[in-house]
Length: 138
Image (cartoon, rainbow, N blue to C red):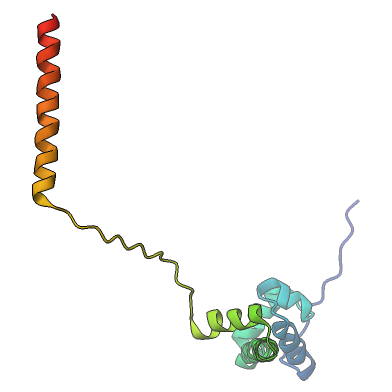
C-alpha cells in the first residue's frame, strides 16, 4: 500500500535569518551542497535563491572573505610571535614565496687538450695491440 507524502514548497526569500545562516556557513569554509544544508536549505533551494536574489551570493562571498581574514590574522599573529612554521605559511600563501629547490654544483677543473689527445692515442695503441695479439693467437 503506497502512502502519499505531503509536500508543501517553502517560500524562497532572502530573509535576514537565511542570509545570516549562509554567511555563517561560508565563513566556516563550507561550499556547495554542504553550505546549503548547513544554512537550512536543500541544494536546489540554495541554487534557486542565488539566481532569484543576488544578496544570497553576496552573503556567501562576504562570509568567505571574513573567514579568510580571521584565519589570516590568526596565522599572521602566530608568525609575529615567533612561530616559524606559521611564518613560512604566510610567506608561501600571501607572498607567493617558495624555497629554492635547485642544488648548485660547481666543478673547477682544467682540461688540457694535449693531455686528452695523448690519453686517446694511448687507448688506441692498447686496442690495436690487443687486436694484434688476438689475431696472432688464432
